Amino acid sequence: AQTVTQSQPEMSVQEAETVTLSCTYDTSESDYYLFWYKQPPSRQMILVIRQEAYKQQNATENRFSVNFQKAAKSFSLKISDSQLGDAAMYFCAYRHQSGTYKYIFGTGTRLKVLA
Amino acid sequence: GAVVSQHPSRVICKSGTSVKIECRSLDFQATTMFWYRQFPKQSLMLMATSNEGSKATYEQGVEKDKFLINHASLTLSTLTVTSAHPEDSSFYICSAYPPGLAGYEQYFGPGTRLTVT
Image 1 (cartoon, chains in turn green, yellow):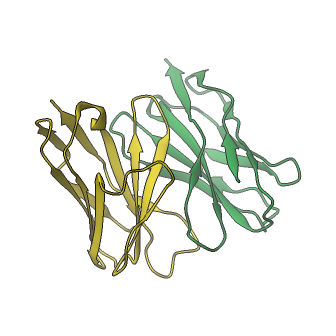
Image 2: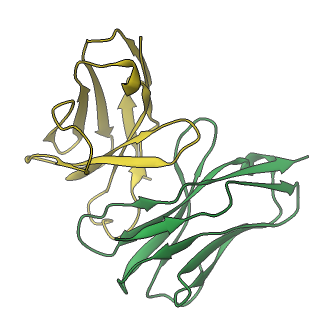
C-alpha cells in the first residue's frame, strides 16, 4: 500500500526567508501525481503545486517550487521569500495516475512565519 | 477554476439525531466526489468515494450504516450522519474532480464543522 510521510510536524521561518518542507512516499507504481496543499486557519484546502511523476522537470509556481527525486521517492516543497500569509498547515498528497483517483495524504507540517 | 460548495458550514445537533451535509459542484459536473473527515491538528482521512448513480465505496473502518452517502446527481453528493454521537463531532470535507481534468487535482469544498451535543 502506498504511504506518504511528512517528518516535520512543525517548521518556522523568518519572513522573507526560504523554508523547505519534506515529504517522502512509498509506491510500486511508476505513473502517479504528487501534490502540495495548503490549509490555512479557514480550513479551505488550497492547491499549491502538483508534479507529474513522468516529468523530470521540477514544478514551479511563483515562490513555490518542488524538488522531486523519483528514485529516492522524495517530494519536498521550497517556499521562497516567505510571507505572513504562508502560515498554514501543508499537506503532501499522492495519487495514482488512473483508477479511483483517491489521494493519500501525509500527516501535515504546520508552518509558522515569524515577522 | 472549479468551485465546490458545502452546506451547512457549521451544524450543531443533539445526540441521537441525524444530520445531512451537502456537497455541490457549482460550475461543473462531477461523477466522483470524495468525503473526508478531519480531526483537530490532524490530516484528512478519506471516508468514502461517492459515485453518481451507484453505491458509495467506503474505506475500511468507516461504518456505512452510520455515514450514509448519496450521489443522486452530477452536481450533488450528500453525507448523512445517522444517530449522531459526540464522537462524531469533527470537520467534514468533500472534494470532486471536474470532468476532463481527472488527470489532475481534486477541488475541495470549504468544509462543515459538526458538533454533536
